[in-house]
Length: 291
Ligand code: ZN
Image (cartoon, rainbow, N blue to C red):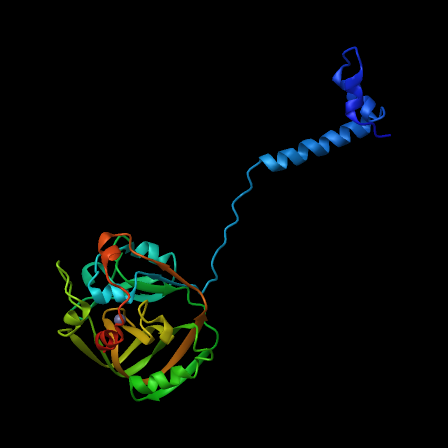
């Protein structure tokens, strides 16, 4: 029978603790042992640090460093390494420290298309001031034939945008009868704004070439953060050349699409970013630099 402990404290002569406990339990040593085993194991559970639960983001999280407005402003200092970017995605686009070329991330490999149009693999230590990447896990593949322009291609890709308020990643592999791209030459400080750089952008033409287009379609409300609409970069099948897509004619190819409702941004920690005016409406500038 249960007897409260305070009753024990009323005794005049000191009583050994073991006897107090035995009395409290009514003299059942097995019950005593069980009770303390339970108490000690519960206390142990509370004291042993639990392993941290990793809240891994959904696979299609769009991961981006800096903002398009920061790039338009001329903030070209590399912020995040290529290695870090690759840990957040295997498909994506962006640029490099000093605006040194167009970035193409495809199949987990990062390529740089320099101002001569040539593509080369990029080491993990190189840095990027602006990029968006995601792990690409597409659903079914859609075949495309005889697409006569980038505008027509956009029309085809539009059919995949079932919800125009989320983010889409695209990959198009195929044979192109024509592709026009551009790249940007490396800049030195003081950095000019992006519109001044792209006003003299080198452009490249490819004919009857196999290659891959990768990139995003993002909704209008993303303005200021990234580029609304389509933004695709091209790389040839041999990964030797490419650039930011300006025009194309697709003979035949396949489209793969993936969507995401998750966006994670990492903003540069440097003073230039902290001081920049990034709230201005730069829609016209974006349209200019993307063409
Ligand atoms: Zn681009």
